[in-house]
Image 1 (spheres, one colour):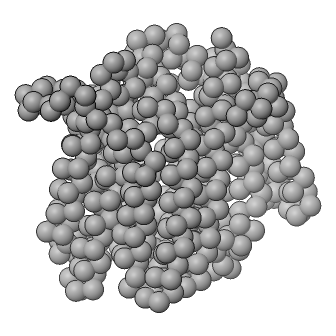
Image 2 (cartoon, helix red, strand yellow):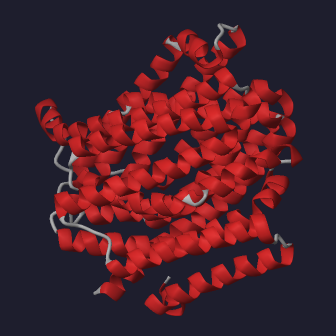
Length: 482
């Protein structure tokens, strides 16, 4: 039974992981083009507008794209009705997001840039259409996720990334910074169209849904989604406030450096987190009444994801300067200090990320909201103090501290509330990996940093992960079944 669980989770994680690697490469190419054509200012502008898109979407979406995964996944015979309801709610909230961005563009411009320049206001208004497409795309992806359409999600992600790259580069080349808002709209439009191409046209066979029935069925989705929205807004605001704070006492260049470090640490490691979330959340939602099964799935997911994450962390720890030179330029070497400190926090983030989905699968919306508030407060204070006293390096330390404390909160909460805990052997493995990563980083920084040695270390970490995965489930047999 356990071997079968490992096999299923490993298969899903490897598929989504492969997709993330491909999209990561495509994203790196786009980042390289932006760095060359637009520099740190361009990267900073894209970062702040992207944050605006996610922030507005978080406000108006009611959390339906996330909460709907639980309700669709746990339903046995009435999925069509829930999918119909989800699509209608998503469409309405996405349109609301567009109107909100356009109507309040002037105020948003002042909050972000501290002025009312016409060009900035127009950029924000144009970005409203990206909010529209982003909202619709998220809704459709949640349906694919809940119905476990793994291959369809994989294809949609790859093709939308490729097409988005092809069409966005000419815009940056011709219009430079003035084309950023248009490029974001085009990218999210392409994402939306591609996702719809791969989704099914789920139709209600029992006829039209009455309004009263629609409201009744929507209650659970919207209630859970409401608290998810509040928690998402908190984290989006923390992110937004942090960037605004960097702009207020620093510069747009400092923000560009922060965006670069944040994307390298979070963005490229997200190939593991996104891969696990796409399959893991609907999987535990389907068995959310069985704590023993959830504990087994959670521990298995952490174990497998850790082996995927380990070589990535090692690679970034010993190759931060090289990565920055290749993906960006020599101007971005200053970001190295942020990466080396923050990257260790990913181990703690892996554990907390896995455990937080248990709260959602259980439908404990208020608990989820309360610990997200506390986590957001910790992150905001850490970012404030870190940047004020230690600059970019302090922000890296803030990321690490936040993830350690957040992880401890989730470990205690799941143990007390659901009697779900990390198994002893897995805990020892997590601690061992942390020690190994810290030692390698310290040796590379203070003792010796040699290109050949670093390459050997990275290769050994990859071989170790492959060997450990193969011990749990034959990779050869898994590949044959695929």
